[in-house]
Length: 166
Length: 212
Image (cartoon, rainbow over the protein chains, first blue to last red):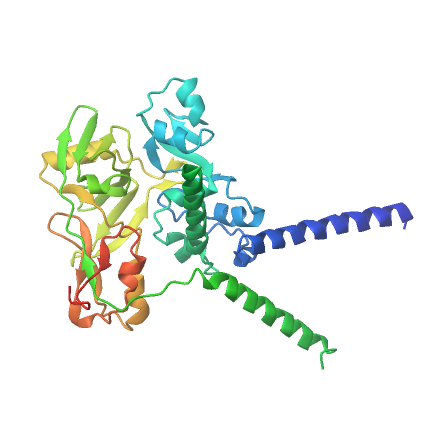
């Protein structure tokens, strides 16, 4: 085999191993090592009455970032509240999917209009979650999703507390 | 002995398991042994307008999500999850029902269907119309703070400590149409799981053991 191709293959393999190690490191750093076992079967996907895709919480732990956007398609709230929580939250208003700040400032939708969420940050989805445990019940591996949600909520609450203290 | 690779692998797995246990230990829940206490049914006032039903609820429900329900002609409960704000809940024309609940002859839930899947509805049942029709035909409408049958955590907790089907806690349809816990103190093992796990605090810890 051409020597340069061997080097190329070795480099690609090395990059892949580093990428996989980064996922493992993120899962451990998120204190949720069990997320590595989730194989995205989507069994939990249709169990949430608030339309939250619980697999998004797993992604947040794997990415080590609670700010990633996940599907949350059935939380009703006032537009002003949605914009205050996260102006980039994607909401459904009058059949359109737009960011909350766009609905408020460009489409001039009244702030007290009730809107339905579509994609929100994982930490905000955790805040909206009613913790009914339907996702855990439907998980074929019995992964402790509520623990991750609890952790995200606690982290969000402490960040809000810190920002108020400053 | 350590040069033996299966032993090494086993030790590594044991070490990882111990690390995972220590990481998760702080998240483990402790259950105080006590009897549960149940919140009183929510009193709500319904105000019907052309395009909206405004429901006046106690301000203690502010920022909580509750079920607004109406019974249809087949005896099914149609319910939508709505937030309470400033002591009121609004149901507008075009707000579709989130769940359709069926009951058996003993007023227990026989099954339910989630009507919204991701971004679309499997059936579009207008909640505003359902409330108006139920009101006009003398069928039950109301507010339910307990999220059963979507949430079954109290019953699961009870089932995890009582073998067989004779549970201390059952969920039944009340006279006002809301589903609520029916409790049998004599069967209760005081495990505390029902009130620790109840996410909406319809079930809380009783003071009966502390004598208050």
